[in-house]
Length: 329
Image 1 (cartoon, one colour):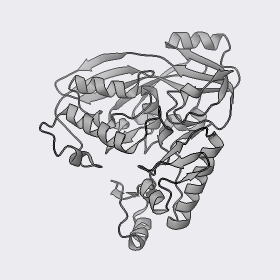
Image 2 (tube, one colour; image 1 turned 90 degrees about the vertical axis):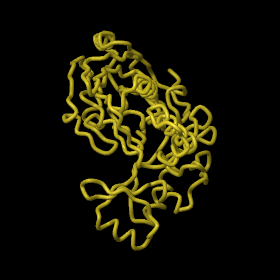
Image 3 (cartoon, helix red, strand yellow; image 1 turned 135 degrees about the horizontal axis):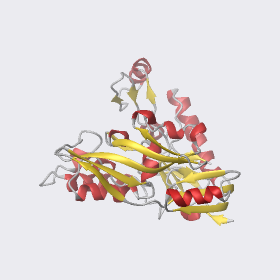
Image 4 (cartoon, rainbow, N blue to C red; image 1 turned 180 degrees about the vertical axis):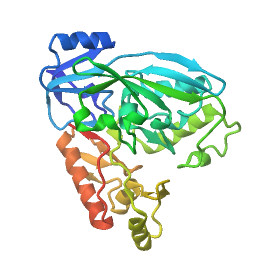
């Protein structure tokens, strides 16, 4: 049995029957030829979006495919191919260092490049789909396929790759387009306020502002086990929102282009009195109600029990069912 304690940021002490890391598509093909994927298998990244509820009786796969390659460049942009095993924030830092615009608002999001394309990660008004050109994959039979961005069917924290029927498709590399001309997204969250005392507005200062905001609200998983935001911000119709706003005039919201409205799940959880509260060995983080934390020695079932209790409270008070952003195994 292989311990997964270092492969999930919740710090849940579970084990897998087998663990395989591969460094190239060719090496992955050799594992397939040996029958290593016969039976149950699960492909993971750095485990920053996983909650294990029990030992895994199968094979855990992990990509170590690295590399950042410049594929094309013109006066306005660059196109980069990035290995799925690269750490996402290292890639963001690389873009900032080279003066390429687009990824800076996604600074300090945990996880790996492959997961960015699966989850459609996002923060402060930017989603990674805004940068993606294509996604290269391999499936459990060794067949290669490249998906265009449109084929990935991206939506809020969702993609083609999250569908249950596509769990046998694994991302090997992601191709991104970054801009060369100054362009910032500063009107979402507290970025502009964080930048108010900055002398020079540039990629470095925006990245530092985003990192400062995230560190002020989110616990370091090396210190407190967590998977970042546990819940997805719900999206409701304009009619539903009007009803809620009449009852709760102070409710924060973000109007989307299709006329629907996104409501911060963290605000609703806070209004239900959960912020800073605990249930057994699991708790709601005191600085950000979207985050559930392992208070020490928690099992997956403890986090689930807390999640269920929080969801019930939100449903009772607001009539909205919030859902987990974290993949529960």
